[in-house]
Length: 252
Image 1: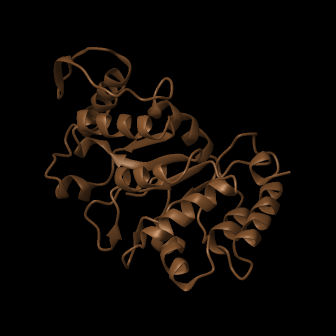
Image 2: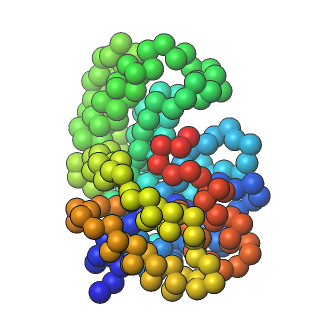
């Protein structure tokens, strides 16, 4: 039985590193993760950073072009520092271009995000809620009239619409419900810290299969995020080590 038939995993796509990331490494990881049966590829948003970091939509669009089935997620986009109309169009376009595989994670972020983007922290929850409401309306309605405390839109239209129904944010809700469940410490250590050592990709698939069976009682269809290395080469290990690849869901 294949790994994907036992337990669903998501994996971080190489997107953040102390050194420039080779696009060939991104392609190989995306395609190999799909071949191994991983459900999702994940990136974080780190616009102003002390290391090399791709824009999430750009690198996920590239990943979409070199894969056919694996889903493509960002965890998370700090929504209050963005215009939700722009975010909505970006992610609707990614979902359309990828055939309905986008997962948009949104969050409030941290204080430094607001300083960097010169956005007041006051009212950020209101900005977040209105932003989510406006994005959903633009994704699902032919014309949108919206009047909030912060955002207003009269007779707004947006195309393309997302392919998946009802929209990529709904996919996020389901995935987050799975990701926030505790993962057994032995499973997290074995997969997260070990990476693919001497056995390479085949060894990683075997160990993930064993670790999945060790996590007894997990509901079918759950999708814990896995950080590890998917190649034996020195270059790929440097880029793909969890310290370099981003800290996973919730990191910004």
